Length: 256
Length: 347
Image (cartoon, rainbow over the protein chains, first blue to last red):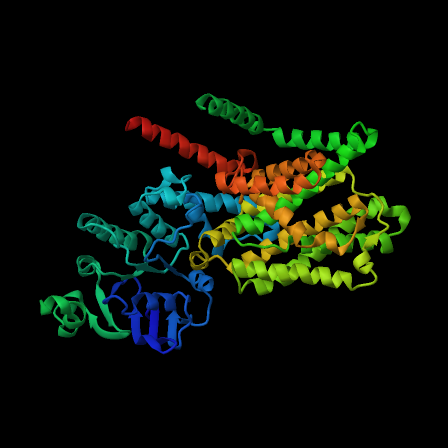
């Protein structure tokens, strides 16, 4: 059974059809790339999956459970986490607190216990703090745990955002342009990093990307969007030679 | 200049060393309660000074609780005086009309608690429309709430209408104020350093991201509003029984503005800042009393200068270590040590 099944997903902003008839079935542990020119509707697909927008039509199922109509935090608690195209860390909070915040969906104490610091509170907080520090250690961010997130250099902020997403213990990780603003060298590192995350945390990954080098290098399957419509799906090698894709995506280069 | 900053640093260091002492809080609370009880029993502080201390305590409760919404959550609520009014009227009605006059002293904490609970209930009701709004719009919702409370109170005869309510005994004593102030500071600190508190902070930083990081923003907003208005109600009850007279005009937007000034003077998202802000503002108002009308020129002027030279307030976004839970500042200390070692290794 596929982990995530999206059927006939359509979303309209007033008259504009941002995504139309989008279908995707993601098997566990797959790594899928969504590509397409600017404004093709890639981020809208992510926003629909995570519940930021409510789909006009169609269904999204995670492990057979319908997600359309749920709020973003309910969807996150069910096992989908994401990063953002332009980094959205909690800038004034410490690195540690950024990660600890992501445990919200799984805390086991009531507000009253939190107000009085009694009952399960202390044990739970210790557990959350230790788990968060362990996760930061895996990402080599533990020596920065007390630093405010806004003081981190750009590359580390990206890394922290992924760590924060993984702290929600997702089954499915959505990465929105993880390579934005990186040079070719850093992109190679990022490719290794993403494969390593998939192995270590055994998550399924969908990523949106502009950098062809990245998607061709690591994605097992690609979906190409253009003006909200799916124009091609398949293996990277197939996509590379698909005339429709070349026209939509690399059209300008062909013309030159 | 550098010398001055080094003296300042030494003072801070000495203070931190003092507050790091294991038994600082128990001793502080014990001495505080003892001092307050002695002061009110033997009257070695004259009544005027006691009254000022009582106002300082009430203002600390108001400032710390409003800081939860305006500072930690980053919203802009101007309805705190409304919640205070609810607490003041409920508590006063209980002591004036319900409780037998013989047992007033014993039942006083119950009256205060009832005032707080009533305010918390109203806070819950206000939180619901506030889900839909943010920033300026929330300010307008809470402003409207403040006006509604005032108009309602002016039109109920049982509570005296616009003439106000009197007949309360002077039940607010220094020890009680100390107790409620310590309780409110402790509870709000606890909330801030829990995952609900981190939820509150993450809403300020980025509401969409916090929702997507599994924070139930609705639940967090309800908790913050309920806790904040609960303590505003407590402060209202104490205020009514310190002044022994209340009328609806005391709880208008001007009162809310006073609390806002204390919050922003002390600094947003800081408990230490709120306490400092409330103390400075209350005492300055008293000290400047001889200036008469000019007082109301001087204070806003001070605020303007503060906003220009220190826009985040005295302790904006910084917390004194004494209010942090042990494990939080231990983590921070470890990190500083590591950072220093790394800095030494690569000069």
